[in-house]
Image (cartoon, rainbow, N blue to C red; front, side, top):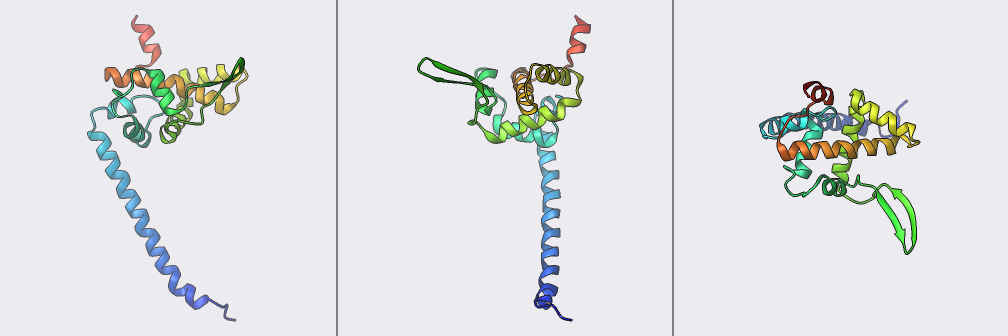
Length: 173
């Protein structure tokens, strides 16, 4: 029994498979190129020293933020990223704080994913658990964690210092 279109599929499918192989090879090469470019950047070690920030996330943050000099404060950086809470007001009516729907969505995603990846870090996990205990849902607690990490990230970029675990700081004091 011959299914209609089987001859066409015999000629098209190998071409599509070859095309897919070529795209996957290009993707691997681009990943290697991005890793090399990030390793050459002077702030790469600063970014990747923070728990939850790997090569791809660090590259995205560098692309979107640069060295952080464009922002006067961590608050401005958080607002630019769209992770600062917004209070809805209309006249005398104030309806509480909500997550921002504006901002740089690529940076917001990078900070959100790095906060999610940092949940294995005990300090980040404790902060996340504290926010969950306050009644926040998972995503809201992650945004709170991302906002807190944004403050630390801004300080690290401004002073060009590596991430230091808070337990190390308290033991040294």
